[in-house]
Image 1 (cartoon, rainbow, N blue to C red):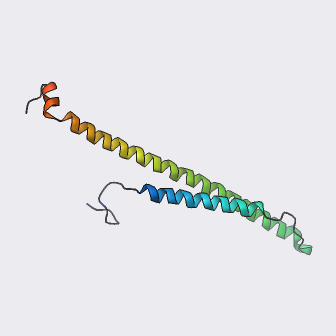
Image 2 (spheres, rainbow, N blue to C red; image 1 turned 60 degrees about the vertical axis):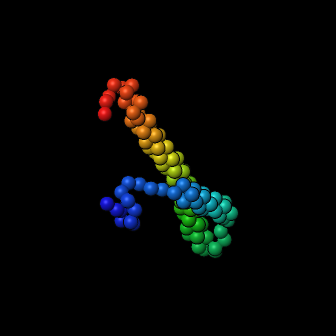
Image 3 (tube, rainbow, N blue to C red; image 1 turned 90 degrees about the horizontal axis):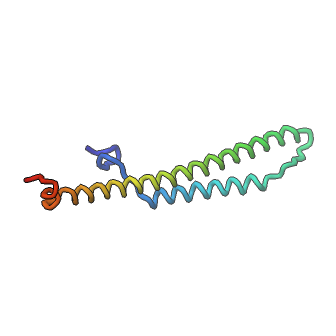
Length: 114
């Protein structure tokens, strides 16, 4: 049975793709931090100064929150990449172990004939 994109059943991943995603997310986080740190805090917009200052403050707060979410997402993708590596290593180890346990010598040791 194949999946929606033509791949076989199960999971697959590409470490380089996940690392690229992490890099892009971290870059976005840094860019948002850079932009928000350079924002002018005091605004002279005449009679509208208070309203413009409030809107600007809200925008900075939203950008700061976005940077935090972006950094958190990068950390989760990075952790997922490590988890996939562990799953693959565990599965490969199990296959190797199963192959070693199912040899004529091991069956003789276990007193299994066949």
